[in-house]
Length: 187
Image (tube, rainbow, N blue to C red; front, side, top):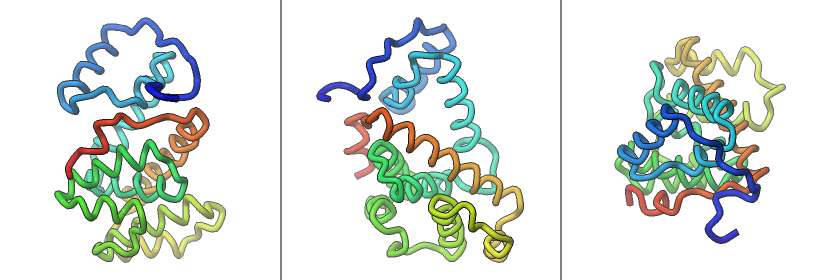
């Protein structure tokens, strides 16, 4: 698969001016257009649905910090062994935390990282939602409230974990590859 961003051979659609501008903004802010976006570029409607959801969950107003949300992405992706998301969101954890070791620890075993009780509660909930969603009970939500999360925060934790479970499965199905640049970021 050398040089390819995914295993499927889907031709990129003719991009609208809006999408071209969005990709240019990615290039300006990140220095690259993430391969996940290029993977969705065969269908602008699917691309827009993905980016709208991603931007709302990861960048929108929330009681969760950007680092919290990236940590959820990494922990869920670690369970699912999603190479793309571990690489991309591991880089984001390194960058947002200013700690390259934390980024690596989150990928390998978040339980060994120096995290707050609040972060641990959030990540344990994301793990349970990923591994055993049918076993989520009121006690799990109560543990998050005890750790200081509001009901809106619980919604955001669940939505972020659910989104990454979905995107991990798409990435696995199409063998999506991360941009090479992610490997060197924030090291």
